[in-house]
Image 1 (cartoon, helix red, strand yellow):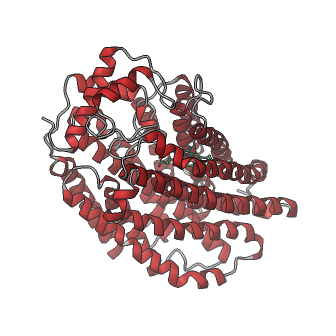
Image 2 (image 1 turned 60 degrees about the horizontal axis):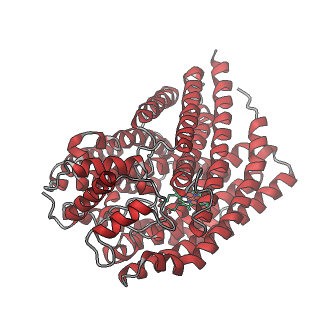
Image 3 (image 1 turned 180 degrees about the vertical axis):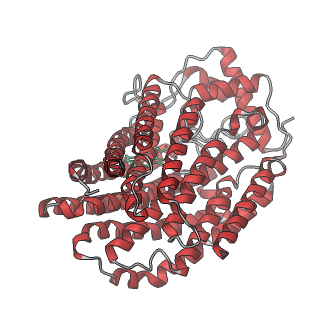
Length: 445
Length: 119
Ligand code: HEM
């Protein structure tokens, strides 16, 4: 029975990762369509307008992150716990419900059914199912790991925090159903940003935690998960997850203390930045064990994006700068820079960690090429969004008509679409290697 | 042990802060009613936030609409016109006159909440 559970855990993990990659490929297809619609708004306007492509893209991108991280956790936790998965059946129920939810929501979006809530545009009853399968995931996770927090490595703390706060923030995002919240726009928008902002923190905890475990394995450095600095940064990250969301609400006329707290907390990120700067060269000198070269390359490239995004995040958290950047594509640069450059690269790195030993030299070359293509194209993608954002901001300050602002931003939006095409090529190269390898991946129970 | 105490303190602070945000933090006197509520329903059903932002929340295909009803280059009449006829980037949703009035009432409410003039 136990052996069966362990095999089940790996099988379910593999299917989750394949589900994740399918979401990613679909997501970038819709993302690319949406970017072309910036340039040609009439493209597919009757059946697949921007009103549908954007939510399809964002919903599937977020589900790529969640499906892939769930799969990795199912594969990794029995190894970390040195114990079989608590329940193989619960893992399958989780997988089926997650896949069914994606199918229902995507079909609903195609048919034009929306709740109209930013990022969570699906009907509220779907949230009941999502929370239910996260509870199943949580119970399976805690029963398998039975963590003793006092002695556990930091990545176990991060996984626990991620699961707990995903459930809390997903429930919090539904408070708008109550008239107390939804009849007052200031309350509604503030709580919406609060929930969404912290939810991003929750998936970051899950992804960073997994990447940390993988880094520990590929460098054979067992201190990574236990040293004081790692815990100091965990608590810094948690504080940001809990209180930093307010920098999204600088323009909302809520209580000024919300802004002051957010500003103060977001400046603690400077400590993170200083640490990266100070340890940068040392970190790059650390070599991985030979069989994990590609894993290491993905994780290290993600580090570059952590640095780039951190600088941008700190800059746009300064109220005097936020005034100009908020409500422009600079926010999209921040969102996509983080979800692609950090989250996606880390996740792919962790998937490669699982399969790297079975990759042929040819496949490894393809992965390297895919990584380089993603990294370089993302840089232009990100820069073009910044440039479009600056153009929009200056247009608004100068009271230009929106059509004129769009016209001025068009050259940058062209670069955005073009680099998006290369980004998709990079992702396809990587996915085409990972999917068959993960499909064939076997584990000795 | 110290780590667990620190964690519990942070969680407690979060619970207290959340309660404060839900009440005192957003204790503003700007309640939506009547036509604005009907407008908000239409706003949700047509997924308007995918292209437009309110208080910076939403997509970037179209302009921010937080103060569309009062700002210099646009105004309520302009908003009604574009809602009725659509535009180069804006689909024509074939709204009735009542629909456009409701949506504009909602946007007017959003504007007033921003300037603290909503009832
Ligand atoms: C791993 C791949 C990707 C991920 C994880 C991702 C993630 C996201 C996220 C989170 C947003 C919401 C941003 C916000 O509202 O602030 C977004 C928006 C968007 N993405 Fe992506 N994205 C990816 C790839 C692409 C690609 C390849 C394209 C095509 C060029 C693209 C085009 C867009 C567009 C047009 C938007 C809407 C921006 C707006 O609000 O107007 N994305 N993406």
